[in-house]
Length: 413
Image (cartoon, one colour):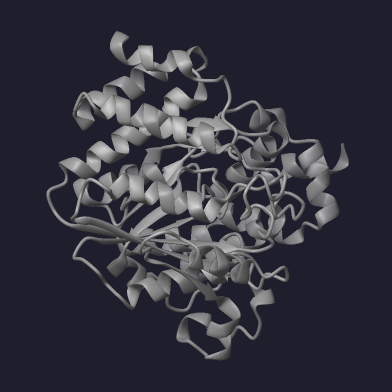
């Protein structure tokens, strides 16, 4: 461990997602760790050790260990693995640019390609492809992405898809949609995942979806692969709520997120072993995706939960959780101003009614959520009961001390 700690001395305290030098430095650190050819087991031990006091080391150090672990996991898997990566883009015309072109520029398309190349470059039997899906972007994010890909060096298995074109062609995955405006990320992710199932590349073909921004470094994909290939799960999800998770996130969204988690756990009880349903970093076996994409009811931000719920209904406890490093890219975020928590909760009520048997407790919460207006929701957010606000979300599966009556009191405070 002392030898590894020497790598951290040159790390800056923070990590700027728009700074290519910072991201390149993280990769260099991960390569330095791997140079010693450590096993995945030993890197897990390092990860646990440095997370005992997360503030003792800079963010780059934590991310570098996770990247090194991810790549080591791929190295130790002796079977071929192919990963299809999908993400949706809506009003990403600024973040897709370089920092020199726009103050919010992350150059995320080129960076994602670079991250995937780094992860797989030493393993000929570990391959990838990337699909960005334009979610009806009024700023032509898809066209900008096509221009960037046309300038990419070498052969790159990456492409741009358009949800509206899929709707116009009446592809089955689009269901009854008439316009891309009916989607908020979910419809595009579903289309991209469906498209990936049309071209199975390997017996171990995994489909990963992520966010457009750089919040989750794709070099961590090996952590998801581990849960599926090595542990036999149908799906694996990145989690920002595990002991070894590294998260840089603004506080106000965190409190609202606690309330969201508490409420959804009252109605979707068979997913109670999962805490973080909304991290944009999830992987599924391609054959699993082929079984769960039919007849979906949610095309917006709660689509994650429907996919997880349908996976869980195929096989209980079939979803692996893995601790990830996640750096909030809230600047220029398209979801911050939307405030989708209430609409997501109402979508989850619809899922509960469709997929799960009714029970009195869940029904009471479902009816309460259905009764909320945006004004009432904001009132609860302002007066979140301390029993929820001060409690760790990992306890919400067992803790149910705040009932509907208590929440109604918060409306009146």
